[in-house]
Amino acid sequence: MVEDLIKRAARDLTESKHAIALTGAGISTESNIPDFRGPKGIWTLNKEAEAKAYERYELFLNDPRAYWEEIVGLRGTYGKFHGQIREAQPNPGHYALAELEALGILKCVITQNIDGLHKKAGSKRVLEYHGSVNAVRCVSCGSRFAWEEVSLDELPPRCKCGAVLKDDVVHFKEPIPSDVMEESEKEALRCDLMLICGTSAVVYPFANLPRMARYHASRLVLGLDVIGRKTNVKIIEVNADPTPLTDEGVSDYLIQGKTGEVLPRIAEEVKTARLRREY
Ligand code: APR
Ligand code: ZN
Image 1 (cartoon, rainbow, N blue to C red):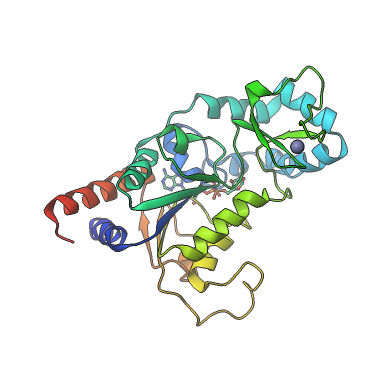
Image 2 (image 1 turned 120 degrees about the vertical axis):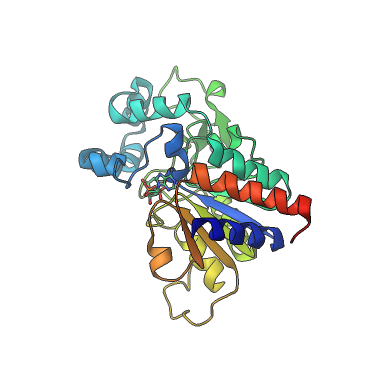
C-alpha cells in the first residue's frame, strides 16, 4: 500500500543521521520537461536525437568552434529542449526535497538534471552530476562561469587560463567533472539513507552511486563479487516504474507513483510526526 510505504519512508528519514537524495528527469516531468526513457521520453520518441546526442562531445573535441556556433544558433532539438528548461518552474516534488533539507533531514541532493530546478526550489546543497544549463565550464581548470560572464563575440570562448570553455552540460562519453564526482561518491559512501527519485537508473557512472551505498564498495571494485557484503543503508526509490535497482534488490523498497505527489506527502508525514513526537 502506497500509504504505508509513505509512513515507512517518513519514519526511516526521521531516524536517519545522514540522508541524501538522488534525482533524475522523472522529478521534472511535472514541470513540463520531458524525461528521456519514459513513455513520452525524448529518446523514446526521437531515436535520431539520441544518436546525435552521442556525437556532441566528439564535435566539441574535434571542432569547438562549430560546436559553439551550433549552441549560439540554438538550432534543432538542442535549442528547443534548452528553451523549455529555462522557462520551467519547480514542482511540489522539488519543494518537498528542499523542505526536507530545511528540516535538517536531507544533507544534499545529487541530481542528473541540468535544469537547475532544485536550486530554484530552494535546495542549498545540490550536486549537479551532469552539469547545468545555467553555467559554462573550463575543460582544463574546471572553473565555472554564469553565461553573462562569458563573451561570445569570438568562438570558441576561452577561460582566463587560456583553455576552451564548454557549456557545463555533460554529454554522453564526456567525463563527469572530477569535483562533482568525488563529492557525490563521498556522499554515497557516507549516507545511511538514500532517497532515489524519478530516475530509470540505467546511466553510468551515476547508477553506480546506489550500488556504492549498498555495498560500500568504491567504483573500482563494483562489478567484482561484492554480493553478500550488503550494508544496512536504507535505499528508497520513488518512481513511476520499477528500475534495475528494484529488480536487483539494491533498493529496500519502491514507492510507485509520481514524485510530485509522493514526496510532499512524505514531507508532510515527517512534519506531522515531529509535531506529534511520535517517532
Ligand atoms: N514521477 C515519478 N517517476 C517519473 C515521473 C514522475 N512524475 N515521470 C517520469 N518518471 C520516471 C520514468 O518512468 C523513468 O523511469 O522517471 C524515470 C526517468 O528516467 P530517464 O528518462 O531515463 O531519466 P534519467 O534517469 O534522469 O536519465 C539519466 O540519461 O539521457 C541521459 O543525461 C541524461 O541525465 C540523463 C540521464
Ligand atoms: Zn580554465
